[in-house]
Length: 289
Image 1 (cartoon, rainbow, N blue to C red):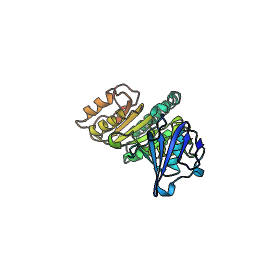
Image 2 (cartoon, rainbow, N blue to C red; image 1 turned 45 degrees about the vertical axis):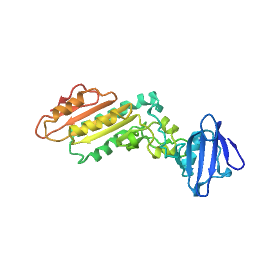
Image 3 (cartoon, rainbow, N blue to C red; image 1 turned 90 degrees about the vertical axis):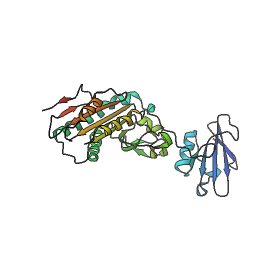
Image 4 (cartoon, rainbow, N blue to C red; image 1 turned 135 degrees about the horizontal axis):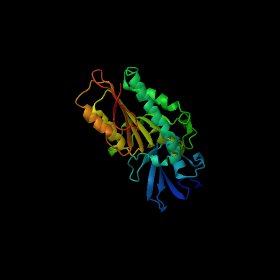
């Protein structure tokens, strides 16, 4: 990194960066690859208390390191060249390596099927859905491969791989729902900044939605969220103790249907009819004694 004496401009990884300092704020402007002043790819707006001088800058080997430092250490706001607030980009699901996924998918599916079996055996072990979330979380992290602390980029902080209420990928106007449970990978976390992690800007390769005592509309909503999310491996766990109703046929039609990136586990244990169950890899829904 080459630094000018007055910090009006400097260079990171071959990219020129111009600094505009006012009375109350400071803007750090990163040039496009053309490296011409006034043609910027992204800007960072710093409050007065966080303005930087030449002696403040650490050694930075990449623009990613510059962004991580400005956002996490200097409280900067990321903006477009026109000055509009600009959300952080997301670490894509594609950053997860297939060998790692191939090793953990069976662990995830076994934890889901075990939860279904426990629900069939003890349908009132849990009063509400959130308790089932916790049970599934526990079932996942019982696997040592999933119960590890992993570095978040170069931040010096570490986190787990299994997360509750993880933000879905951003849609229109950045309105995002939350996955009940999501799994991140060590490769993704290594590529992420601390701010990307804090804001949930990592697209999980594995996400799970779980419903208890809901009807057809809720199952349809869970499926739509996962199918549209871009998550490669989505799972819906639909458990019900409701009385058999006219929606049963519609629900089981959804359970049987093929969904491009979603597997469904299902159990219906009414007090007034035949209990039915489907594990993730099962064929059609089957009755149980």
